[in-house]
Image (cartoon, one colour):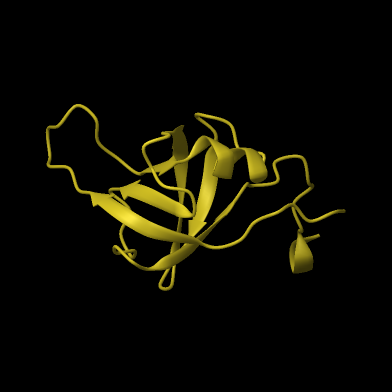
Amino acid sequence: MSQIYNPPLQVVGFIGTRAGEEDRGPQIRLNAEEARFRLILDGELVWIYGPRRHELAPVVIDDSVPRGGVVVRDIAGVTVTEIVRLVKPNLDARPDRGAYA
């Protein structure tokens, strides 16, 4: 299996929402060129790996985000200026059952 181009990204913005807001929940905003390098489409779910934890969030393609950066919404464990990685979940792979097989 080949690896795709996936350099780290810097968090350049953070959007925190309040209870009751219509647009709420985890989200990642990414430049179209960065998304194309990573084979990520608008609306796809990706894992965002930060320095303290990881979380699953949908991607929104937003060309106002600078190359090499991401804007995150409602994702705990990441702050502005930190380095993160985005990883597409492999939904085609069979789960490893380990000791339960």
